[in-house]
Length: 137
Image (tube, rainbow, N blue to C red; front, top):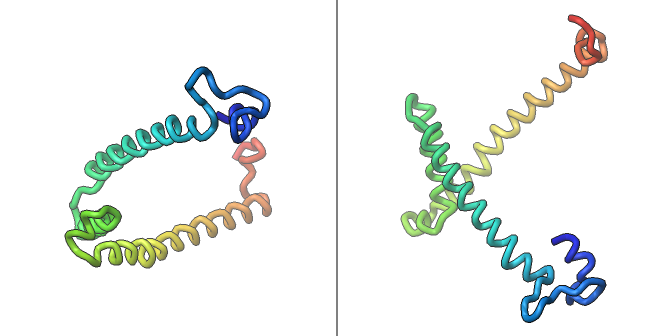
């Protein structure tokens, strides 16, 4: 696709022919009939994979797991048209969950990663950690 895009030109007549009989294989035809179909298939498979993984991992064993399961269900339901049909404010609630609590937890994880990286950097700079050089202990 890259070779045809570069050598075939926008109309398929730059350096290389992109038509055999009535069949055109210019960049847009390949994109629309090939890549878009492959991406649709991939995302459909990914949706089934995510649904099965969510079913296996979201087991309501504690109250925190129930909250996580409920918020995941609300977010997923807010992304599809049937969620808005069930409750008109479902996309707004879903967006709020994604913007407020999700952003707070993401910032907490980012802070933990940053502090861990700084601690590792200080250990390496002060000579406490030498395993990266292939040293013994």
